[in-house]
Image (cartoon, rainbow, N blue to C red):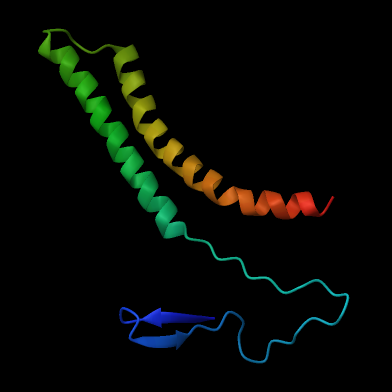
Length: 109
């Protein structure tokens, strides 16, 4: 696969398959490469967790600012905000990349 590098000043060839990979025979399944971007998923999960932690800290700070002591429910909600931040970010990224897989499976019917 050819791509531009150095702001379009030169072209670079990125091999998709290693040298020597044989082409499929007629009637065989086509070759496919699946690339995963786990670093993006985990980065977004960390950002989502940080946002959830910020909301949780804001919740607990609002409770203590009123002279109240947080109870188990407040800590439970704060924990769910943090876990929800991680989980929602991972689900959003997974759902964004899922349509290609679903379309392929639908064609197999």
